[in-house]
Amino acid sequence: MAYFDEAKITVISGKGGDGCLSFRREKYIERGGPDGGDGGDGGDIILEKDLNLNSLSSFKGKRNFQAVSGKNGSGRNKKGKSGEDLVIKVPIGTQIFATQTKELIGEINESTSRIVVAKGGKGGLGNARFKSSTNQAPKKTTKGEQSDSREIFLEMRLIADIGLLGLPNAGKSTLINTLTNSKSKVGNFPFTTLTPTLGILENSEKSLTIADMPGIIEGASDGHGLGFKFLRHLHRTKFLLHLVDCSISAEEALDSFSTIENELKKFHLDFSKQKRWVCLTKVDLLTDQKISSIVNQFSEKLRDIPLILISSKNGTGLEELKKELFKRL
Image (cartoon, rainbow, N blue to C red; front, side, top):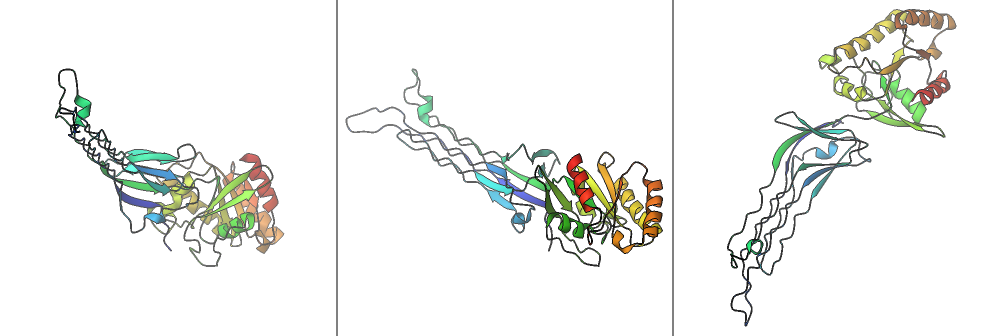
């Protein structure tokens, strides 16, 4: 099943209604004054935050969105009915770009819940608006403003506290399932996780959001595999946990670590300022001697990056990991 984190749509606001040309006509009143009402305003197109959404899948197969136009004014100073706004629900973390200019229009986030992406046209003025001491019977009116039509590009970037990073089958899905009781697919073959999975790690004082991304392979920054599409999601996390399967040889484990680090360096977004730890996974499959050897080799290479040994199968290191995450975030 495809994961929709991008969408290109056309939004058309409502046109403003025209002002009315009308004069009061009642029995026994020969020369009633102007009573043409204003036109109604056209509806806006508004993007609004919906915390229940986690993708842009609602835009699949739907590209055009149009708000209601305002009604024309009428006699007896009746203003035309304004068109209803069209509110489109989007997930938090949605960025909105003008397709032609690539300009960022805005972002739906914690502090911004609504953004008007196409403003409805103002209603025109009826002739009653133009009555003056020198013109008691004006015939002037104005047309309603035209609708605003534009194509916009939506890009959703997950906002999570912790991002799980690693090659396919490094143990990311198993870890998030163990820590948060989420339901990320687990299997001993590449690309078991095809879409991001969010889980919540809680204690009595706070909750942390963890994002499990599809595994990244060599060449991901150039578009290979599934990981390239999701690297930008990882860039928005506060903290990265780089998971490395250490059930293989130390050399292979170090190579897999280097593969991911090189892809992060080559990607167009800068990951250098993000805090991260390395978690050596599946330590339940190793002897104490092999664990000591692989830790020594990683410690020499990592230097300033903390190293944690974990096993989602038997729980090794998980309590320590949770304690440190709550402490630092």
